[in-house]
Image 1 (tube, rainbow, N blue to C red):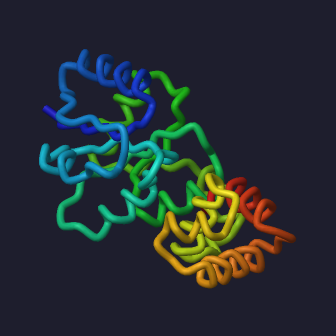
Image 2 (spheres, one colour):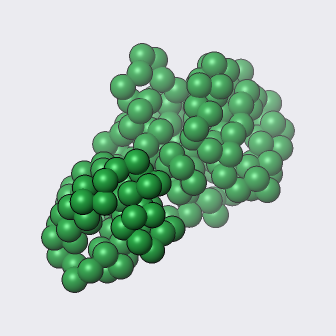
Length: 200
């Protein structure tokens, strides 16, 4: 019996996937969570395969995949997302994801992908690889990404600094670097470009 865990922030979708996967005779869902913060509980269930959403509040699925890559005997990761952004695909590949599926895929396809990944296959298409390589590596540092993400929720430098426990001058420097690296005119444009490329 293959042990499956799911981290997906849309509760209705997560429940539907769990219910349908549980109908498969060789699959069992051993853990499900709505975000990446409770990863220890998920790993304690010892899943063979982890279905992982990308865009979640707090810790993103890509952050989780990158963390897992540094651990001993992590579960195999299948990314399950709405987005086909080049930067997301590239980061998923670099983080060792075995498959990159979109949420509009039938559950039967997801179940088949889980089985193939568990058997040692990589389910990354040629088109996905081309898309990932087309934009180049993410130019933003982790801190620059954190600042831009937080900038989407707050208007002022002071609010961003308070949320991230940084000084206002440090936040300003990170924003200036992000603007330069994305060849943008301002913070709003830097956020838009970074989101379109899947760099956040």
